[in-house]
Image (cartoon, one colour):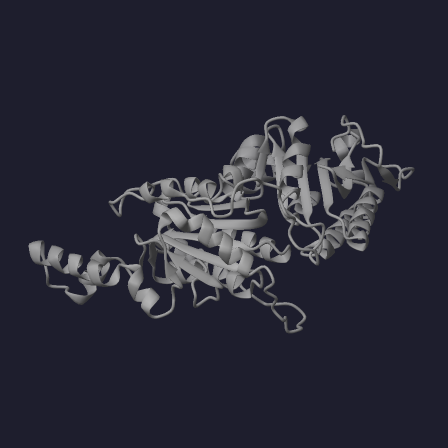
Length: 455
């Protein structure tokens, strides 16, 4: 991992005698073989030479050929200026090689210091990026920003770890210290197969598949406007209550986490009522779509927990492409071929219900709690449209009547859009049985060059 870490005895070096600021090797991470390339020199603050770019590319080609995960640990001030266009060609070749790995072998990255200019784009090609608290990454530095905009900004404010963990979505996990980086990367890798043609790993646990979850009966508040922490639901369903949440600070109204359920490694996408009431906006849609595609690429079943009142309204959001980005989430689910289980916990309204892996978008098993409200919209909005002239007690009565008839899971179940309405206390058992039943599911893929979905 970092240069200070002792290499495992089984390490085999790659291009060991080639000068440069990075070194590559086949080594072990968390007891798993990986191809690793890491910054080891502070010469010119780790600037990447043409040879460094070739080393990264060679490591990526080796990972692809041997069907092993690729780990990139970067600390670089950018392309080596003294080499001119040669250094640009080098990191361009590295970017192409990392792109070839995408969706074939897991690509994990870590930033332990600066990651600047063009080579910083390599981080965006990784499936999961870990940053230490002292790291920072950007394409254009403070001087360039000030020269173009007239605004002076510091290194941390421009591209510090906090920025990438909360605003840009680049950082999936934060390491308090550099020594924690290998453990975080190993934790992610423990949920992933070595390559896309292998099933997800089985994680050992003594937690019974049929374990009751009575605590979930009291979790959702009676008031539809009250919030709760959906991570408590995930922990209750997961083996031994363990979950690895990715990008927790970015778009917090949507939780994306890796868990195991009855030993099956899977990904969880869940609306978070504690943040913006679980509404979907552009970052949430991008976060969910990226995670769904990641899980689908590496054969991890998807569990979706739904509690959302809809898409977040706003002129700025619409101008920035809410339709296009909202479609990313719908497209990712519709294209996914892994087993998909959906559980509607409470609110599931309108278009947001559809894109959160509804039956219409193609889930395999759809369950609902008795508290589920599956409808075009809430009672207030529906009565405002249907009974525009009503007010006071009459309006209240109409809303209650609408809620009693339409805001239940029974209408959806009667039409086959929900397979079963279950007691929250049986949720883990129901999900475990569904995942077991779907374990042998295979979907024939029609050959095509690539999709042209929304970006």
